[in-house]
Image 1 (spheres, rainbow, N blue to C red):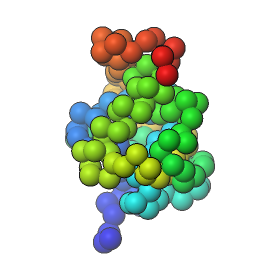
Image 2 (image 1 turned 90 degrees about the vertical axis):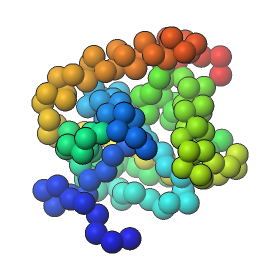
Image 3 (image 1 turned 30 degrees about the vertical axis):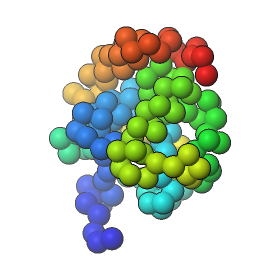
Image 4 (image 1 turned 120 degrees about the vertical axis):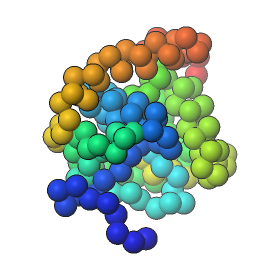
Length: 160
C-alpha cells in the first residue's frame, strides 16, 4: 500500500469522499456525537484496536486524535439502529444511516445488498484545532437541520 501520511508519527485519515463530507464528519467527531464509523470490508481494516490516528478536515488540517476502541466485521444489513446512531449523522436514525451509506458505497463502487462492513467505535483523545472545535456545535446544528429539511425526523425518531 505504500507509506501512509502521518502527523506526529500517527496515521492520518479523512472521513468520506469529498472535502465537504470530511468537514461534516470531522465536526461531528469533535462535537462528540460521532463515535462510530464503518467501511466496506473489501478494503480491509483501517485501524487496529488501541491504535490512535489523526482525523483531518476537508482541507487536510489535523483536527483531532482518535483511538479505536472496537472493530467488528458484519453484513451491512446487520448494522443495528443503535450502531447507526453512533455515527452521529443526519437525524441519528437508521433510515438516514442506511440511505447515506448505500449512496456512499455506490459512489465508491463497493455497494452490494449482501456486502460486509467493518464497524469501528472510537473516542477522541485530543483536540488539535481549537477553532475547528469551537465551530463544531454550529456544524452539528446544521447537520440536524439539513436532515429535517430533507424529510427525516428529529433525533432518530424515524419510520425505520
